Image (tube, rainbow, N blue to C red; front, top):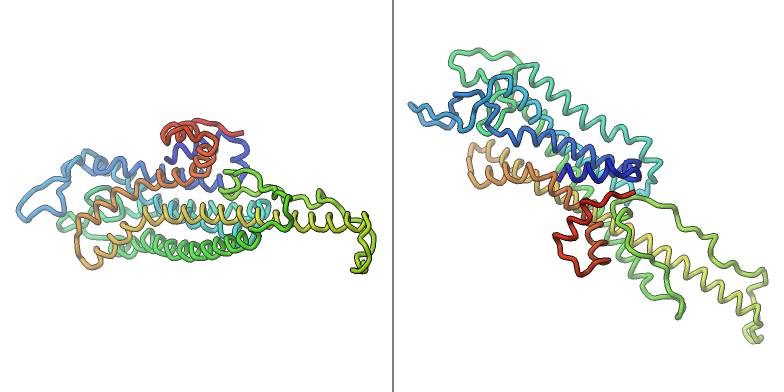
Length: 369
């Protein structure tokens, strides 16, 4: 899924210029880096490592462990890099908050865009390098991460940093993830409120002012649903009224010039009405897109969070651990589904006879301008 997003963005000059698509590139890169460790699973763990879950008096080895200390350090480095993913999800949620709720334009967002990448990747790189340099990397049964190898060696002494590995685990991964969950949850609520307000605005303008005047709503635009912002509607194109006085005697018969003035006034009002309805519809679609990214983040990171809670309670539940290790690596696929959704719906409207697989293949291989 992350590779598809990279392909769609990097091959399109238009998307490469837009902050939202560049954030998706960063998120996809983070998912790919952490996916390296997920793919390796137990392979990088040193060969002959005994499982911590082995019964006393037995020498049950970790299945698939064929690596070395160096390969485990490398896998632990990439595993810690996964912290960039929730931070970038928070960044993406911030983008939608600024564009939907506070109506920030692309030019304004570009001025602070460097922060969107410096904080997630800077924190991920620092913590990953620190973990390797401080000899904190060891095996955690299914992969390599922050858990000193010396813990499984009888008589080995821990350094002062290694003795605080539990605290470091929380500071480097668990705490940032929980902060991001709370943060994106707040933004989810704010986006939902804005979506409801947009729906009320659309309902308010649902009845045309003047019979026979059709609102120029235009077709669906997948880029606008992503949050891309086009030029504001040009009010100068509306018909201009005359300079005659509007205070006409109601008992006086209307002249042709007076009728023309009233007609143009009604058209100008209707033009503003149509513009408000279009803006409300666009804001609603962008808010929904932002909320879907938040839901994808929930799906991927919910069970890892529950796993940490069960660890604190010293309870092992296989079903939760299974969902943890299954759903977390799928965040790239979930983000890809949300990313392609507007284009998929537009394509299906234009080609109603095409099936889901045909439509997905068509929008995936298409290279935008």
